[in-house]
Image (cartoon, rainbow, N blue to C red; front, top):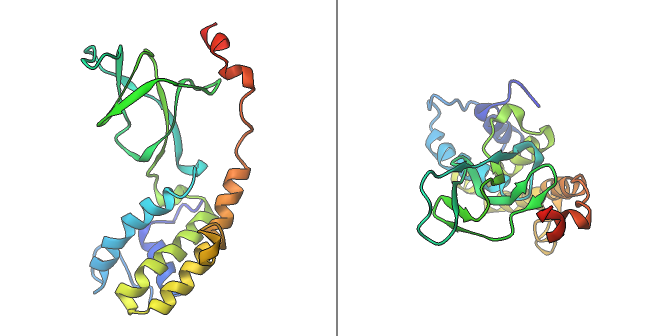
Length: 205
C-alpha cells in the first residue's frame, strides 16, 4: 500500500515507464492529452478489477431488506450494493460459515429469495492508495497498453505491453505480470469449507 498513490501518480508511472513520455499528467486537466487519459482510466480500472477475485477490493456486506413484500412470489427482497463492480461473487445466508444462498433471482438492482437475511460478497471500487503494490504496477502496464494507440499511434507497443501484462495469446491472459498475480491470488484463497457445512440438514439445524 502507498499512502501517496493516486490516479495522477499511476498515470505518470505508465507514461514514463511504459510509453516513454513525460510524466506531466495532473487531475486538473492541464495536459493536452488529459481528455484521452480520463476516457481510458476508469474503464481500465474496471477491467483490471474484473480479472479475478482480488482480496484487496473484496467486501462482504449485509444487504438492506425491502420493507414491502415482493410481488414476484419470493418472500424477501434485498437491495444489491450500488458500488459493486461486476456481478456479486457470492451470496450467503451465514457469512462466517460460508453457507451459500441457494435459491434466488436477481431483477435489476434487487435480489429476491426466501431468506430474511442475505450477505453479498462483491468487488468494489477502492481508492488507489490501498491497492496492493504489485497490482498497482501491473495496472500501469495495462493502462500503458490501452494508451499506446490513442497517445502514440503505436500498435506494436500496444502488443508488447499486452504481452508483458498477460503473456502471449496462447496463454489466454494467464501469463505475464498480471497473470502471475492472478494465479497467486487464487492460490492464497482459503480452502473450501467442510462438506457438511453446506449439507441441507446441517444448514437447517
